[in-house]
Image 1 (spheres, rainbow, N blue to C red):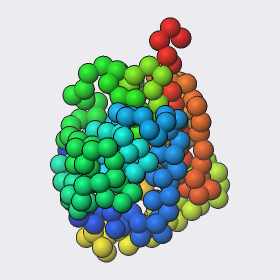
Image 2: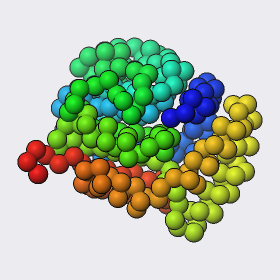
Image 3: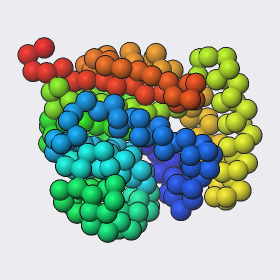
Image 4: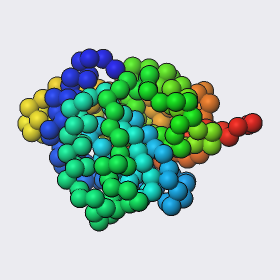
Length: 247
């Protein structure tokens, strides 16, 4: 990821969460909940998870809500985004409400500022890897999948929640109208960085379609376990699986 994109995301980190919820009418919370709900491991299992392009840790926190015995390593290239996310972690007292678990919340989440193409983890370290709305920001998605494959255990899961390039005509109209006008207008007014929200729209238009990304998964050695559209194709989820040893 370029230094320019890194600086762009750092610049909008203070307003990132609020704008996500506002611009999606809080639908983004449901998308994340449904994504973590696709993980096939038992909720009682101490699952080791990687949240790639973790941003302000919303997907990490959703994972910890659903997996009280789990731990998550949250990786992002923007220190400012992670710093903002950690304020939400510290706002929860130990074992509070829906985030209660077998250990205090601060000990169940590890935030690391790192390059997602060269991660500081041993081979076959994680049970599951998930990435919410950050996969399209990689300069090389094939290299990203290769690195994910390396750190994922055999029989592990990969979940990518993303705004793929729309192929349905109605969804294209929505993306073009919303992305060209509403997104930069509201995002720019609140964050003061209209260009950041113009970039978000461009990055979707220049990205892979859902079907094209499924082929990337397969070429990287994953089998497709599931793929589904959310909110009539506004965003989509691909669930891949790394084959077990000997397969």
